[in-house]
Image (cartoon, helix red, strand yellow):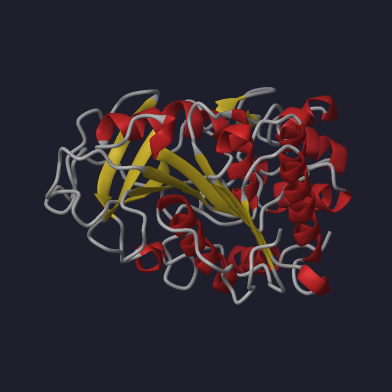
Length: 379
């Protein structure tokens, strides 16, 4: 499997940053409701396993975008020995974009799009102007709701790690996102508090996360979009990529732990895979291709979309082949879905149009053709 360029660039950045040994402080504690002149106050800041540390405008972003820094027992959980970090709980951010009329129409319930970032990325990835640029990307779109962009760890893989880092702690990302964050968002914002009001989408590692969460939690989500997603963790190339990421960036979150070897996972590829996903016998319950074979995406029929480059051998070839296999599995089981594939790279200029296409498909009128100049939808 060709390793995505986003990971190669990030590893180069990691090496350069390590040489500089930059010290970056953690998120400061603060009062709930900071920046209340631009953002709404939160009625239930400490709920569903989350404790709010700060709620403030996101630096350099629209006044409608805020950062909630929370702590939770899920990030991190002690495991396998005495944790090397103290305290084990570290602040983790969730970036939230509110619709333009949110403050003017407080009684209206809004749908929520959970947007997951890619490998070696972080909570800011979808909002950076040279990456996701979500505020501009969704301006004037068919999506009328709230966008929630949670931290997922640089190599968290949207998993509750059964194993542990070399420092004897482990992130529990699925627990944090699905069991804690979703009800916390509903408790603090005007949302459609049902699966019908929630969609999940993501890019690359986040695309795997979106497919994983959707297949495992149809009671939580009703629409799913996957942009250049990982679809099969059994693939040897995928396993090498995952193993490399757990050594290079491990369980780090933004700058937290990035230069600390105790956040890494050492050992051979099977050991690192088991650290993140458990033994292979349990992978079918976590793997998009297997979830499709088991009919787990049937509830998303008509509200599921796959996007990938790699057509004609150009760009992200293996990711394209994986998407094609998942597409065929869905077809074989009668799950209606949008499938767009063409000659594309593992890069943001392709993913932003895919996000725009996805929200048009789910919340508006299905576009007549696929994004990125790919022409008609692949049958």
